[in-house]
Length: 73
Image (cartoon, rainbow, N blue to C red; front, side, top):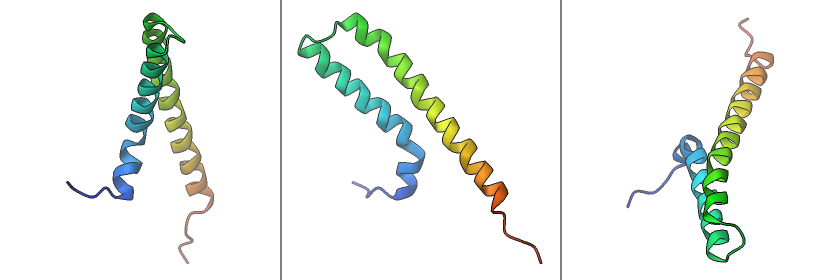
């Protein structure tokens, strides 16, 4: 098995978070705290939120990159 690098995590963090939330939803359904229908409705919302957070992180990173651009003297 290949060792994972920081680059792998940076590229796949959204999939990891979505999978963790799916696991949490599965556990909640198995303990009877929510129904399967509620879980099925929540997972697309979680995916949309995680994607939105990724977009916000990318935008903030781009803005910081603009302000702290290396000078060309």
